[in-house]
Image (tube, rainbow, N blue to C red):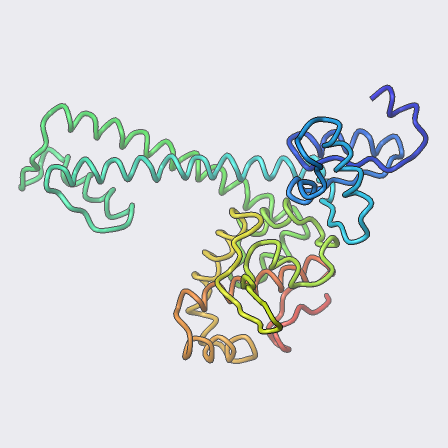
Length: 311
């Protein structure tokens, strides 16, 4: 940092790795132009075997390419929100693992419970009740273990609900997140995650670029001038892509019954494609609408051609 403070304003390039955004903000305060590059775009410029000198040369070479895509510097607030989302995702994974282990324990003893965590919770509450008329074939030790796991489950639910409440409060206090939440299928989780990861979406020239960054566009295998489109690429931010697909799944039944461009498009697509394909296509559409909302001071409106209108 002492060296950077003495240098005249220049372009400083580095890989977008852990700590790069923090270091980039510090260097930017000295008047330097910061260019963060995804490591996968640096790799093609590494010559022969890898070492620190060749890595630096590759980063410098990649930073001078006119078509290179750079990563925008994230603010501390954006990084904080992303950290909260990752912490919540970790808790959800722990809860899912706990529920799967409970189901496996019951299945080993010939007890099959219907799908859904709420159904499992109701069954355990009834089965372990001392006044239950139908005895459950579980030993005393296993009963105690299940009770302990239910207590862990309850604590995970409480902590996840606490994060959800925090995201709702953040959506109400952030203008961009409030505008995003007007889009069908975009709730507090999706809105705060999009603002944290994308910002104002200025780094994406077109709506399709955001959808492609999220891995929601078809994978191409074109050769000889003959286009061939496969399944989605699944590149980029897996967490955001998952949230958008879940949001599209929840919004599809209501949107498919509405009148207008979006509703007509969904009904036509549903008539000729599998439901999962329709859900992913709607997630792609929601990502494009989110791009338009973030790029403008507008909210979503389905009144005219399903495009955002200024307020």
